[in-house]
Image (cartoon, rainbow, N blue to C red; front, side):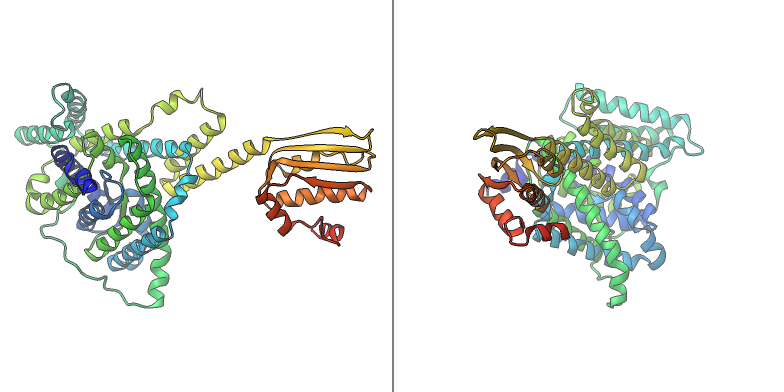
Length: 493
């Protein structure tokens, strides 16, 4: 009951106003993403309504906005062109099923392996892409000075109006004022209505009209897998960012299931696949939206606006929405990351910049995050691999040498481990104390095998002491130095 009040009823006025702002900003984007995917604008608008509404109830992150997105639309182009809308709707349903399966398998926990540098790079790249997406509105053929004047006026209202009052979100004031000015002066500028035909009816529940055959599955499965992966990546990263903005936490596995349910519903209501939107989520949070009510209001208002007030919505100048989205890109970009370039380690900076470059160059969030995670893993392995120290002392008048191993032995440090022993020294016994070390993988076990067998080959007696329980289990299972045919087995490897 406490959670119900917290998520739905603790911030009603701000959630209502923030939801209205988001709904207005969602309309042109949903239409634009439909055009990118090659489908009718109502497919994107129905998806935005359905996904936002469903995730308001079953998503894990209150205040996060999910709808049709550009990253997902780009992946649909080929399927729509070759097989048509019904196959896209079927792929959307399958995408949702795969995402629910990912949540059931607790794959959301993999977010632990995404470093802060990757998240920062992801955020900065999205801020750049959001800004770049506004440029066509400012550079297309026939653009007039009135457009630039409206954008500048919009930005001025967005940043100056909060000095007067914060009771009403400044983006909402911007949209209403600039729409009024445009209509009153009869300015000849592009409006939402110029983006495409707005739907005049509510969506209807229908299963995709496709043959249920193995061939159909072969057509839609590759697209659905890609959509599911990209959708979850963007959603989980956005959830992490909203967690930071609101100083709260969310269940990433529940979010996977919620996104999946929303996509299944969208596919059955004539909508395309979607996921969380960082830009709209930032608009929501910056406008005061915190609870599930803001997400629900955004979805419901969107549908009511386009179906019952379509004539008014069509009058909104695109310049007003460009101003709002420029505010979003400025607010989304992590400006501290520029200042921190001097202070942060080189590896962290390389990961952040590489993530930005790959995402912006390819417009593919999954590739950027994958590159960032791989680089993070490489730098981490390299750094931990350096944390290995081996010292030795001579005992029993030079007849015994005692080695003390301190640190982590795994694939990145195995060569250093082997190189730290002197196999040519003429001694009777070697004692290797690993009580301050940990053996992580079979490469580390193989390195210990090499050391022990090389010493024995020189006629030196070897004793390994101090193995912790985990290392001992690994070595008992995979080591060959304590087997009768140790030398031969090592040579075979």
